[in-house]
Length: 418
Ligand code: ADE
Image 1 (tube, rainbow, N blue to C red):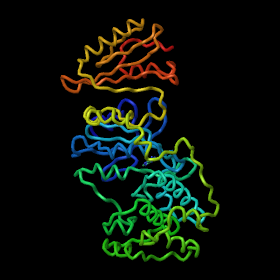
Image 2 (cartoon, rainbow, N blue to C red; image 1 turned 120 degrees about the horizontal axis):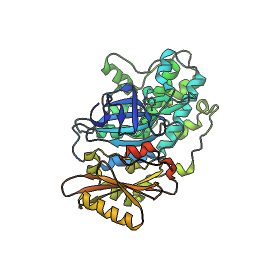
Image 3 (cartoon, protein in one colour; image 1 turned 180 degrees about the vertical axis):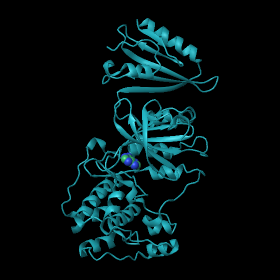
Image 4 (cartoon, rainbow, N blue to C red; image 1 turned 45 degrees about the horizontal axis):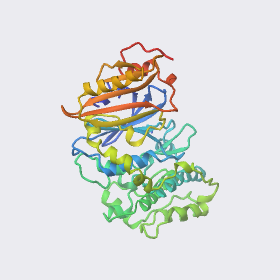
């Protein structure tokens, strides 16, 4: 890793301590890390932005980030925040303690009961996302993780569209990685329906959980493609007739006749012991929500290039989940010195104390030492300055701002904890 993500330095953006490398793909590395403030374990997925054209944070990418951030489901890995430098984008994800489901299946196939349990959890996650217009498009056993209770957590939801966007040659790609999960309509290079493609991949997963191997697998890739096209596969002898029938409905090579999520929910094999998960109504959103936020996004649009060019935290883009601090950003043509003078003048009018920071910026405190807000200024060009203003909300109490946080903010003054 390089720049802020240098694993030798171990600390990312002064906020996360990188611990171990969990996995590595063609375009991304995943690390286990610790949030230094809360002690919480997280997974950090680092993707290279090399060769991406300037301004590559397109509307689509921002939209995906916004949607992913709002996916709250017990069987979907949460995305906490997105950070970026000029060269890399970092997704800070919920850490799944139980590791990969793949590792468990490799030790031995699952019985029908356990296969069904995990498949039900997968379909619950798919149903939730599909009804919100979000498709995975790269479902495979490697993307299924387990939490501490050994329940399923689907990872990378919504990330495939992003990956497509930001592959090194800057072109839009359909898929890389193992073709064993690819739906025939993708191989045919036809336009495809994201929901149908996810259902096909879920059929491959169910087959693999129960059989211990993949339904379409051949050393000769063209032979494998032929098998997928035809949709001909054999079920292992221990598969019940009900499961066989169900697998043939999932792995129907015709997307138009393939089973839908609603039909899956009504299937007798699937329904056995299925408990519908009620997600919090406040988590529900339609795609219109995104449009409704246009004011916020218009504002953020102005920061696309700025955010990427200056290696700033993009959490403002998606909102902070444990949002105790309000961050506002704006661009000013004033010099940093002038901005600081203005802030200091206003603060002094209100009998507040102004503390200069090591870098360009100030902290404004009450007489008792409680910090009210900090101003960080990042020079963009000689004529343009970016100001970041962190204000306390009513939720935030000064008690929560520790000495370390103050120090991390570059405050040189001895900070007195209230
Ligand atoms: N490997 C990849 N993503 C992970 C995550 N979110 N938690 C644990 N291991 C992972």
